Length: 100
Image 1: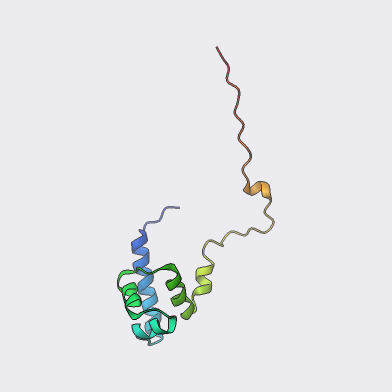
Image 2 (image 1 turned 135 degrees about the vertical axis):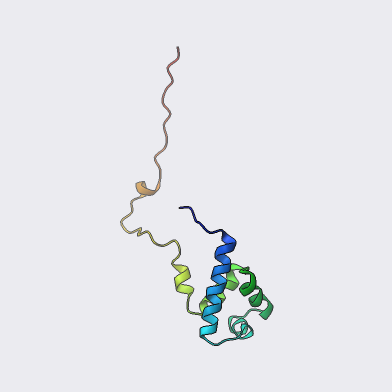
């Protein structure tokens, strides 16, 4: 599936949504940074640019109660009842060429 947004756009929008959650809790940037074990400058840069390491983002999401939601990414498909032949592609066989 083709996304209409670039990765930096998605990161910036995510930072805005996280900021909104922080404000719902009435936390300052320094407070959310402290509570999630980050340096304040790291968190401030995240809100401003959307740039943050994955592990640091996970700490923030955990603090905000969003970690389970993040953990569901890519789990949409139900794999119960799936057979090995459904996953493994059959070996491709080459046809013989007719020589003229």
